[in-house]
Length: 61
Image (cartoon, rainbow, N blue to C red; front, side, top):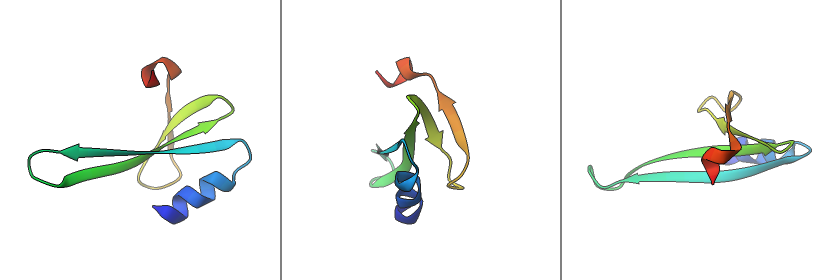
């Protein structure tokens, strides 16, 4: 995901936030995703590295 993260960080006005979700069972299973902030709006970046799903800002509080 680093190349994807770097490409989004290069976009003007973008901030990238890493999110990692760990699961207790099975042990050590985790899922990584990113949240992109662009123009004061937040988006969930899907695995394809280009598709953004809008997130209402109050959900992140």
